[in-house]
Length: 288
Image 1 (cartoon, rainbow, N blue to C red):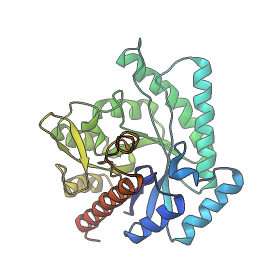
Image 2: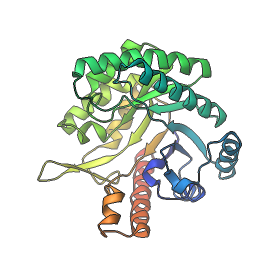
Image 3: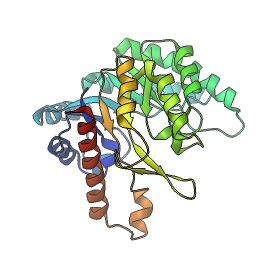
């Protein structure tokens, strides 16, 4: 398994600096963020810019495992759905141009006036169409357990089985099962086991739970999760994909910097430190 970083977590760094940093800490691959303004707007996703991204990544001896895409299929409005399908097509073409096989996708946030059952039904219907788009491009859409609608094992499993396409899989985020919900760590392990056969992409986070029962993310190896156990679960289903560290323990940068808790440079330095420690721990667990 290749080891790397989700670049969204270090999105305050310029893209070329990110590449050098990943190489410096011993990573070989990444999930490349497509969020608005990420990497200080140093990513150019125009047709000409895409070839420059490929060249820059190769020049550092790295690869892009997945793209961090965004989508919302909790909806049923035909016009809104059409926009989502156009968005999926854009991500798939971007993936082809960047020589990437996986696009991380989202289910969407809870919508007022819609029940959980209605939203899940919408998600399944939407991704059935989206998976056919992905098939045309030879790309896999990997749904992340994120937010509240699809952030448990049974729901993710239902969506994956109902979509029923080899071009639709799961991005397993090890921290999110406990973040947005009241799931315990023991429940998270059960969910890891349930979704593991469908996993095509992995985000690794560690966490602690404070006296207020709120989850805080910490570098890998400094929290409650046993990464040897998690890797054994993935090994058990023959997972051969990348393991991507995503350290988010600092909190919302917009708040922390605006409130003067950190300067921008201090915030970036702390993120780098947590990411470095995470990859060191992962390499130790892997015996790399």
